[in-house]
Image (cartoon, rainbow, N blue to C red):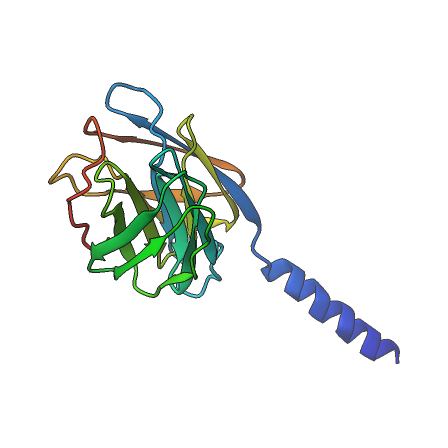
Length: 210
């Protein structure tokens, strides 16, 4: 009995020793002028077997002839629900290679979930209101977050180790490759990134898989 107890304690101790500590990565994104870059997506890849921490579902609302928010991130295989809290009907569509669809949604309605099963970026528009634009970032990485109005985001429960951080933004200058940096996570970590932006998002640009 005593030997069995020692074996159990020894196994528990070995498991504790092999447990990888998790940390929070605090992301700060600015543009070339040093101003906060909202609506940027930052992903972390590294451990191929890491479980996904990216949301399975996101909601894009329609108010005052605008999609809100401008950018959402979901994991591959996740979905987006569109709500219409506007005073008019909208015709939501995407012609992006990542996902193509088109449907009408009247005021007060909620769409069926739109599943995004390919990684990349889908540009969303409205056939009635050309000024409306939104983007769905479909992540194949275990971690992804969208920056807020202050250009910040938090990636939580990131195992300590070496990760590859990728930065994407809908207003990134044409021809500019997504910023990719190596990140060493050892306890809570701050990741500061910069990106050159255009004045406004380009609706008609077709985004390739990242």
